[in-house]
Image (cartoon, rainbow, N blue to C red):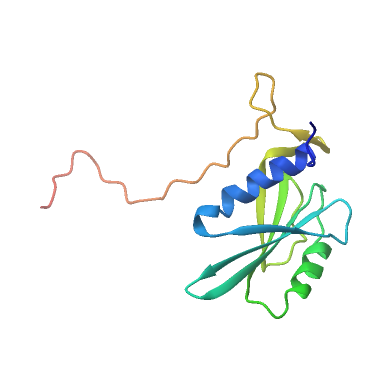
Length: 149
């Protein structure tokens, strides 16, 4: 028996469930996308009697567009739209994405030298260096100076 989902959709659903857990009440419903390359979903949950909805698009493009997200958000105009989310591979160029859209990077896919690759955890996998957070600069205290208690 085969699967009805592409392997890339399987990884996309894992990313969605990692950020929008069923435990927190989120339900994911896939809807038709205006772009054939994007996967579009509406996530919803009930919180204290109110229904919250989130528009979410998964894009595998190196320079993702918000067209699918804009169409999806427009279709939810009467509902309480909590936010708009775009899931993209690591190293995708998201500089053109407007501010209200929250960008989530995938753990499973990324761009290496302009090509979309699966970031496996195996021996010869490409690894992205984690950005270093600068340490807070604090006033230096000499070890020779006495404490004031």
